[in-house]
Length: 257
Length: 270
Image (cartoon, rainbow over all chains, first blue to last red; front, side):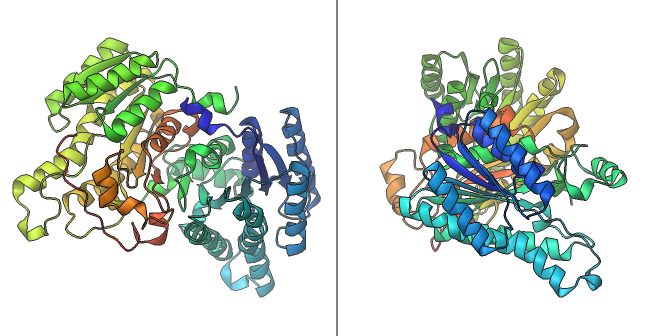
């Protein structure tokens, strides 16, 4: 039965950045597809911790195991401890989703070295740290799925977005390089390229949102659940031969000239 | 409804061109397995009859329509037959295509006929099918189009002109489709299969068992089925104008496939 290949029954997942709309939707979808799911924040901001706890609640309601943990995704000790907890509480680690997202926009001339480092530390180095920690048990077992959620700003530039764009492009090519390095180890590494999506901090401004909806071919923003659908496919046995790819879900933005 | 239920295709109808063998057959059977009825369209009737038997064995309906996708009249007749029989067309899988005569020649040796055949088979055929099917999709409120490109649509190949040009053309054709019909609930996406030998020992040998593919092996036909089901289903409803490459990692390195430029052996059937 072809649909059985999509089931995640018996799998365990760790989703970092589950306080954001996309990370949260992915965590819940993985649980719906059968996985036990641990979730973590991107930063130690209290609103993120609250959101991650509520995400874990949703996972428990689906009768899956899991936990929520507040971390600073740029802190190596935090990330290592998180992965160790996931492996020890859930028994193994099959799927890592890096949905780190620290939005940042400022005219380039005003970006201080500290701000630049923080944006790169969380959005790019945070993914490196998570891949490094989580790949150890995956490579040992010869099986694993790593899914990096990136922005379409990995592929396109944006006014006032230099630091964020650079970090996102970094994650995109980290994805390709790791995919090749681990191609024969049973660990696939792919990215989902998210376009302008419901709930994104960049779109808090109502005018910006309306302008974006007019510009997008689909005439609407992408929805987190749509991005989660791709994550379920990429995390499943059905996608064993798929690695090093960026799958865009962008309401058509990248089809534009 | 759970996330996995959104993959089900019960009660839907898919047209699969090139359904007689290889990837087309595998994808038609996967769609049927997920609940879809099938219109099997290809040139060779005995082969699509075999596919139809396998679809019916899964408990789905299957209409066999011998079709030449390079002939607009043949394609129109096929789409009309599908709509007449099933009353709807939910999925169009434009799989017909492949290497044609003249593959393996440098450009200064390619004849007009070879050029036209290659472009007709891989690019115009998909245009004819979309043109014939889209009015039905618009009338019923939406649909899914899946076009089949290749790593050779994204990278060049030595002595490989009609195939690379037509497969690259399909990518932008599909992007334009996605933009044109985005607000009318038709999603058009691409799959890019890597090297799939279809259990043919000569092809396995030709591609050296896939040892130059980053993942170290060739693709298995049954691996394309789930991808096709995903793109045909509601689970991928937000995906439009995208490419999903299932190829074991070759494209990620910029060498597809690494260190080896395979020339696909000629296959005349679509």
